[in-house]
Image (cartoon, one colour):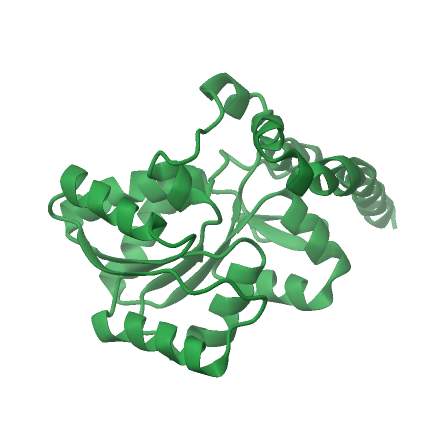
Length: 256
């Protein structure tokens, strides 16, 4: 077993906490490496468990970050504990502080029209030495046209960011990065879901005590109940029995 990851329902999830993840990102950029990173909450793990292409996408990425307290609980049960959750909501602002010191180049791709620009304006004020080299919000589409896709790639490659932050919802953002990764001139490409809106203060985040206790999902549900009902009340309950099944299978294989 790779001690830097724990396999949860067939997805190799990083055991690194936020601080360790930031140090890894810094080293990648310093070394001029090119990496694809995914943020994986419970629902993404469940989708990957049932979807071979998504599972392969995650398991060929450089890191799958543990977005959610339930994944920490799960890793403890499986015997290789994740040291801390790493959400896009935390990673984006915290790595921007580092980017300000190191003078990194960021590109914000996605979210609703105007959101990326608002976030960039706020960061230019907070982090004057951080280089926001581009923003772009593509029109909503299940799959982008060839022309639109070429435009997005060209915008990114023209400015060569150290980090390409993508907000297209999961797993759409992960598929887009995966499919275009070879053509992207970046050090790190990472999908961060709704982190643009939250970091820009356009959507309220759950209180700290809810984040720490694993109840941030409930706060999000109260904000968007119609969109998130299926995710949290139909799909998510499958996680615990599948996890215990994995534990039992592992125990039985160890006895052979």
